[in-house]
Length: 261
Image (cartoon, rainbow, N blue to C red; front, side, top):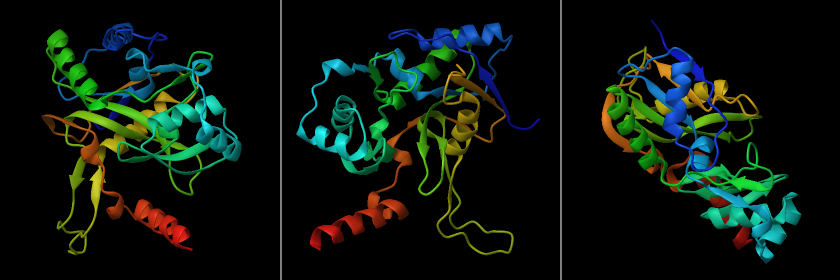
């Protein structure tokens, strides 16, 4: 049987809830049992809420930089201030969003989001998602005896493409990237630079079922995925250096040229 993805309808989570308990409840309600080799793809927002990673907008006082960016890019000043606090670097923006660098990843608004957040709050990105995914994986084994993998899935936009896609913020239990360099293609030609992001492909498929509004599919069970289980965690190790990135290296070069001009 080929790859299967099964969305799990999770109850509405509240700050501090036991996320794994909610997952196990959803599995039971769906008459599903975990198997060795399954992958649990978990929404990053569900993780953040379980970690109580929320900020109350009215408690945040925007500084001068936040006020400037809010005016330039049509943002709430309080929200812009939260993004500034979370971002490692702000590179620019477009209407409604700032382009930021966060933990080595190019992302909108440093992962801060108001969608599906309680009224008056913003949800912050998860804290140490690789460690969280490891803890879920270990606890699943303790409770069920099954060896599974866990991915924390977030969404992002792709340069010059409309709409969001999923990507893996962190992975525990399988190698997220397969190195194809020096293998040969159909015509015997050596592959020079290609590495296959298996985790991002699986995350995007899971994100399709998770949705972006009121679906409540915060977890997707992935079955018969083309992975090999390992006892390791991955997050920033899936990133590459800015100077090695096609988009980032080009963007930074243009920014530097603009400063010199």
